[in-house]
Image (cartoon, rainbow, N blue to C red; front, side, top):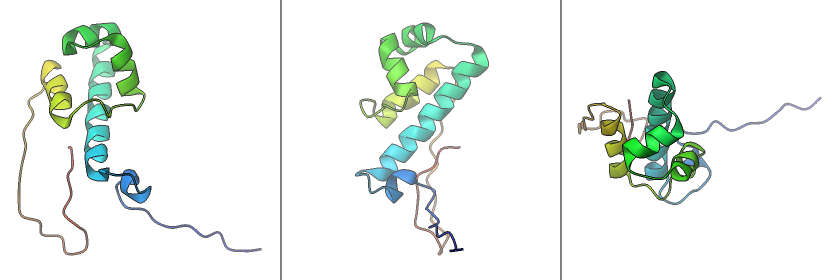
Length: 106
């Protein structure tokens, strides 16, 4: 019986897969996850969200399905504001010598 081999990835699957602009994709994915979570909590339908965001329902569907390249980080942040969220950006010195500086959404 052979041992199964695996490799531990980083926190960023896009970087692990070699995607260009991996950090940006990771942040966008986190923002879309937040948007999706808020929509579900409120029982907001895609048509209602589209109206709120000023986009078409098919674009909301694509975004929630992982096709969010067409949306900038700034635009996704504006969607969160439209969902009545305060958005704060915190910049601080990096202090973790084991890991590289990173962009994160909390």
